[in-house]
Image 1 (cartoon, rainbow, N blue to C red):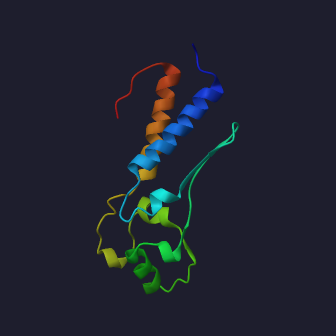
Image 2: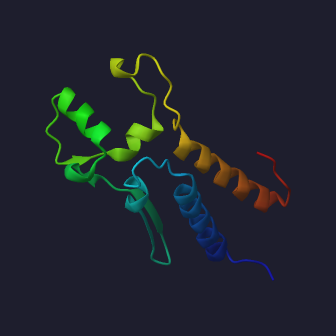
Length: 122
């Protein structure tokens, strides 16, 4: 039996959500608890919410204080997705850099493979 377009869409939304949960960098466990999924039957929304400053990891709080921010909430995902630019890291590479992008590309490739009915290797 062929899937309807809505069934395929729901399946890919679930795939994105499960990949983000599975591959989310875990230092303190805070970010994984802020990945939200909502599928109302017509649209799928997956977000990585901000976290309250008082629940941010100590290392992130130190950076925020050092650079003079007065954030009440922290945009947590950007610190895991993008390169580290601060001199604090002495040119080190962010080990989690592009984790969201990699998972998105995997889902995109999976969608294409389903449409053209082929196998993919990533």
